[in-house]
Image 1: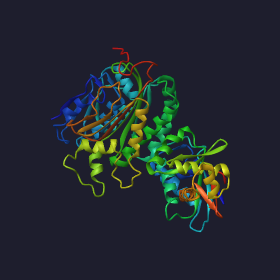
Image 2: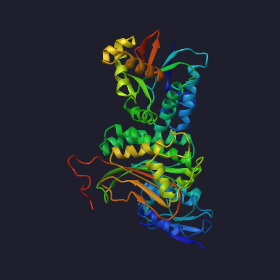
Image 3: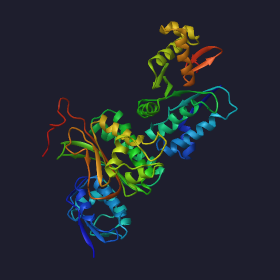
Length: 305
Length: 185
């Protein structure tokens, strides 16, 4: 029997939880069909998480592509289908090749499995990020290097801790509903070990009574703890946290059944969400917003909707 | 003895590739540091000053800065360094600064860096160390008494601070006199 998993029309880090809630009760060898026919939009998180989701299944899942031509075309430009074909049995019509033309995709969905991938990801994004961050987000040029550094560190997280490959995508868009300003978003998703298991593999690890996904995330993201004894380690996420703090951005890291977020004043997310539907590996999202107009209160920014 | 190491060239040799000018990933950083340590020579080396040149490096991330800068300094400021090595950093721009400062802070390290026509300190130093180093740098070649006089402390206190700066490889002790790294370059 095939279970149909419905993809919400707007797929981002929050609405992806609806996908996971549907998958959670099913054993990994149960056949699923991920039905994205009615999807209209997906954030980089949504696209990369869909690929990671397929990696959690032992029975090859099926995927129904978005019916709306504009959506399918956008997902093709983001190189989603090209990778999805390797993981899903594909159904429906979708562009086989990425259509050319202007795009706000800074980095297509790209696999990250080894160190060289991080070099090429950073190299590809640097030039395009320069244009977007300076001209569209109107941030100081210092924000550009920090962006590339953050991208590098979150990608390395996969190589160092996941135990298998993952996916990265970077996109810029106008975030009308939440912020009314442009944002640039990095999403990095893998279905590997996850933070709890990674930290549990540290020599001499002694779990406390409240040890779990949430405490593992607090250790890694807030306290910079890593599974290595070397106290140099664990700086990557600390660096990403400082970067989003400086540019009024948001960092969320989901792993297992928990999500921890560094929440800026313009967002109303919770700092720590627990008891979520389980999802293997780690999923990281970084959002950097356009500079607020001078004199504007971050919280009261005008919304388009 | 003085060396000059162009980090960008070392990076290209390490990766065997001309495509990348970014110092990213911990693995790359460890490999680049390994190359730098080879270029610095072995146990038979005596005192040497090495210019570590970042001029042609586009960016460096935290992990790479930790490997290339922090671990290099940790090794050569340890109680058992391979030899007496001093480092002067060149070509460190705003694009490199955040990552390097972060790792210096994490390990309580400090380094001397060229800035146009002068040399400055980056990293974690006490006020006494900072004042003593800048006084030594201004004086060129100085005895502890000169530095004490310059910063208004007792000679013993100045000597103690200068010894600490010598252990941190920010000052060289030459025949009873002190020379700030950077002044000697």
